Amino acid sequence: MSYIQEIPEIEKYWDNFSDEYSSQDDATNVFYLSLLNMLKVNTRKQILEVGAGAGFLYNHTMNYKRPEASYVATDLSEKMLSILCKRLQISEAFRDELFIEKYNLKVEKANGEQLQEDDSRSFQSPLKRRSCWFHSVGRQSKVLLLQYCT
Image (cartoon, rainbow, N blue to C red; front, side, top):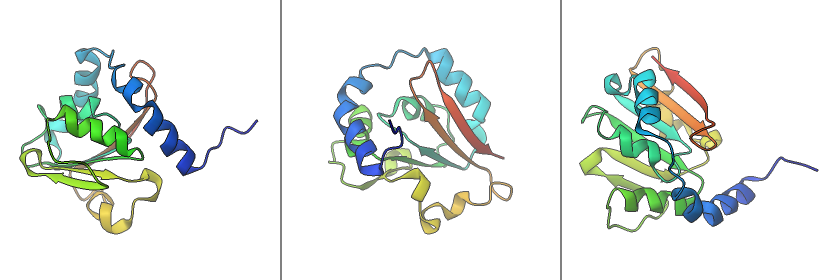
């Protein structure tokens, strides 16, 4: 049995699972606040979240990030990103990419492994910039967090 899936299969899975997943936000505020503190989100000028899903983390981050800090939230699933936009009470329909000036937030349907250099150039040299990338995998209670921060 092969556990490796092609990107379209993964995208379809998350699109189909998005409603159920978005109702499972059972992590406590302590979890999110600890994560934001560990990542020093309040000091970052740029933040890239790969696998943003339904926006559980961004919903907490928006209260702690610098107002001028740019935030890019990406996910494979357009349905998940639509839920993220709904969570933020964004009335504009989500289609592939959306910039929400109020939050200095770019929401983009993207495969994190294939982000184009042009799209993520500002995140390429974390030692030269105050930037942070992070990606969480799995339910909030069992998270693999990959972070690249200065």
